[in-house]
Image (cartoon, rainbow, N blue to C red; front, side, top):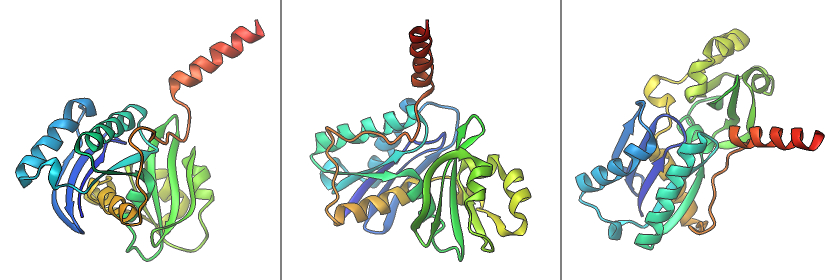
Length: 233
């Protein structure tokens, strides 16, 4: 199955083309540009370089979240529109599952961490691709307290890099930081998981699929505070 895979859940955006398990092409850009500026040009370029059109694709895979609220909306809207226009299958892939997949060969626990700001992370605990705990939205120290004792732990994601001093201070030599290129989420792994879902018949409806945010946005929190204040007044 030929798949177009998209990720815009973090600052690092990527698009990939897969033919079965083979990566035909992958575009990764980790710069201060909005995904609305770069996602469609990335898709156009990688499709043109591969010589593919929408008719060559069997499906589209896109990250569901958690992650950046704006980034997730942009990526999902793009995937839904293309799936509808090209009349192909759509698969939503949990962001943390795709990131954990990049470390599934690690002989220990795998802990993907995304920076959720405000001193918190989106994270989970995995072993051999299976979820042991999560997804969570907690301070990094609280997530570390959930780790089983004794085993080494591989950390991936932008949250792993940001909070590495805290992680290393808490776990010492048990903590392993994934190498830079493998620490960021790659759309090719989103594509692998999306392809597996489509083969199992787990197809999304482009009309109803929504991002998985895990927590309320800043705007929703501020609105809730305003409503509470008005009620109390």
